[in-house]
Length: 126
Image (cartoon, rainbow, N blue to C red; front, top):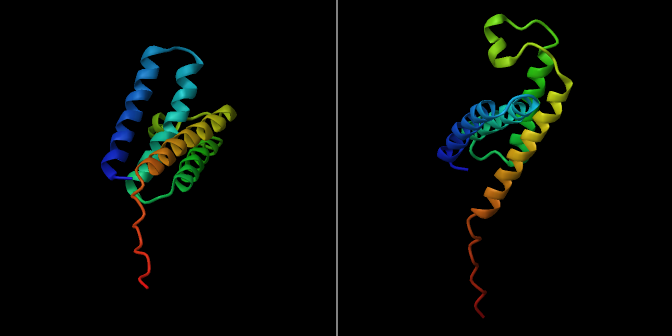
């Protein structure tokens, strides 16, 4: 995937997260934000490694999101709490997986749509 497209996906993901918080109250922005947090990590992984396969980027983004969530079981420095959170919440783990799966599906669809054609081979001459 081109880096410019991955960077655009990251910017649009941040905009979507801000838009969800602006438009809704209650659990919708909270859990949508969890999923979008993982989508952002996914986009950054693709930005750093443009040839990464969708399933690998999904594992990296979900794994990192889960690691951050489980880190909240211990002390988080006050300066990092706005970025990493401060309270472990088990349902967040599901929404991280949802975000990773959605990003993987979109990335896979893009890869299938824009895959370069196979070179045609010449038939053997006799």
